[in-house]
Length: 219
Image (tube, rainbow, N blue to C red):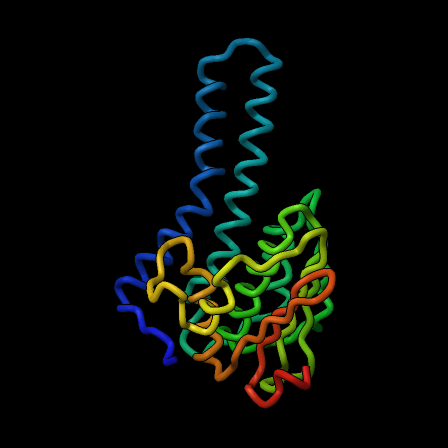
C-alpha cells in the first residue's frame, strides 16, 4: 500500500495542534500559580505557588526547545545539527523520576532531518514505558551511513496500537489526526532522509531502527 499524503496545510495544522497540546499544561499551571500569588496572603501557599511556577516554566521551556528541533526548521535548508544539542533537549524533556536516558551516540553533525527523526523516535520510545524505565539512543556507524537505534526498556513496555502503521505512512483508518500526527510525521521525515523505520518488539522493550532498507536487518 502506498503511504498516504497529507495536504501541506493539514500537516501544518496538525503539527501546531500537537505542539500546543504539549505546552498548554505547563503554561496553564503557570497561570494558576500566578493567580494564587495574586490572591493568597499566607506565605506557605505563596511558596507552593512559586515552586509550581518555577517547575512549570522549566517544563514549558524544555518542551518548546525540544519541539523547535523535532518539528521546527532549526536552521536553513540543508543545515546540520549537532547531536549534542539533540541530547540536551531530549534529556531535559524525558528524564524524570520514572525515565532515565542512556545516550550512546557520539557527538557529531548530522543532517537536520536525520536529527529530527532521532528526536521523534525518542518521543515514541518514551511513550512505550509509561510506568518508567530507560531509553537508550545510539548511532551505529558514522556520517551519512549512520543507523539510528532507539530502544526502550521497562515494565510492560508496549508500542501503542497503530504506531508502526503510522511510521510506515499507512494509518489503519486511512486518516491522521492531532493524536496520531507525531508518529506519522516521524515516518514522513524518515522517508525524506531515504530511511525506513523498523519496529522490533523484544522481550523487555521496544527497538526502533531507522536505516536504508538494505541496512535495517543488519542493524
